[in-house]
Image (cartoon, rainbow, N blue to C red; front, side, top):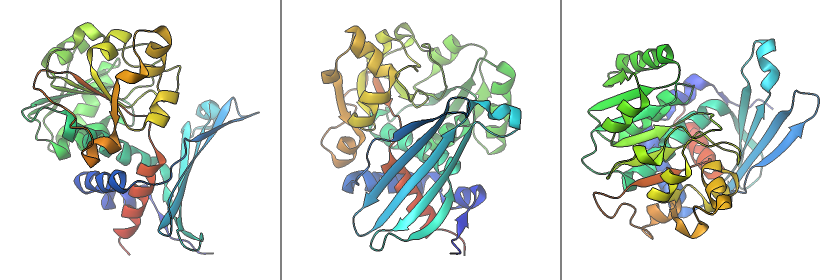
Length: 313
């Protein structure tokens, strides 16, 4: 079997952020079968994890993302995370293509947040703050910027030199990006905050929020991880990508619910509700909104199908 393989470069070329965001909107509108991801421990691999993320649209397409997280990979000189996406025909079940899974993840994660921001950000928002300087950070900045005309993009991370480097890289793309010295400074100036870290302790505090702000959280994806404190969640009008995923895996919500400072009933809607018009999203200029995502295989399937359709043959 000689399957086409879409490399990282192929996917970057195919998945323009604005087009991808529109594709995700259509995918959430019609829906798909997307079970919560399977997570398995791989013994003998330094507590490695194997994640399986399937999704399908009956008679249209099937896809599965295979992800490995091996913390010991540094000693082998390879990245901790590896990912491959397998796209299959929805009628026959036969493989159609293989795609670079990491790039699919990076671009669909940014686009999903940008999609939520269409409903949750104030139209007059001028300043975006990106918290974190890892591999995902520049994609979050680009996705938000492709969907909203920000006048300023601020970068902050614990490694100030890295924050300056990411900002400089974005500036080369023509984005109005600069690094800020302190998180407090960035929070004071920001209208929208996107946070993409692997933190297990809150970075953003409720006292740092101000009226009209939108908070986007994509970093934590286990109950032990979190990027905001209980006060931040309690002050905000909270939305999620999916109830099934976020209420099981997102430490930013799971921990406050367990502590009794927040409740499941306070989660207003999931992304499909916003797209379908079942919830209006932001309803006033002054309210604080928060979107928490852990990722759903529906997004991967939509991104993979779009990349395959737009591939350069």
